[in-house]
Length: 111
Length: 113
Image 1: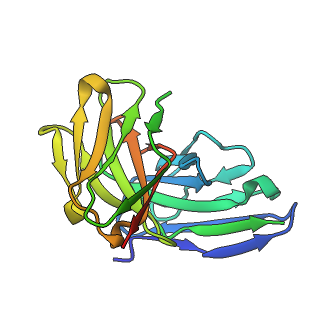
Image 2: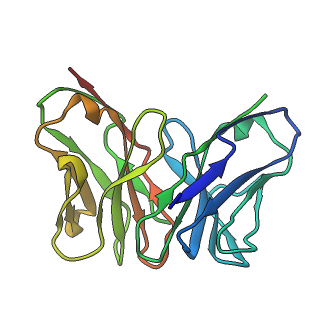
């Protein structure tokens, strides 16, 4: 089992560019989520999905879009990158009332 | 909304010292509690979790945590730390009805050899 796979691992964007961070899980988990990690702030929830076709906003959703067309995939789209979106992004999956399983992370720098 | 407080942002210990990291969450009801560890340059890994039952939970690598409902606390302990425990530690909680987590700010532990 690969678990939760994120691509790319590193990315540099220019302000205003768009991109998609990919996340795939092979554990048939219903729940998937995106977090961003910033120094001294822990991880904060960006968007969340409880199943294919169902998404919801987390604590810091502005500037990000998600969709969940399949159980396996949960891509995160940055529509117009800003320096404030420089961060490490983690995708996670799990079932109700279990721990979350995290991917390796994507380190994004917006210049 | 639920919030999580971790008491110390940086902790420096010598090898063999005992460790206790504090964690408090903001309100009760049904909660599931977690401690995750992030080694330098790596993703988050689960150390231990509490859902119900015995409030003293044992995890991997000799870590344990105690859930005290009346204090809304879930403190992490290890009797004797090793240099390899150098990492950042995160306390997290969910509301028991899904898989969304609220994280504390993290505690960076450095163990001196």
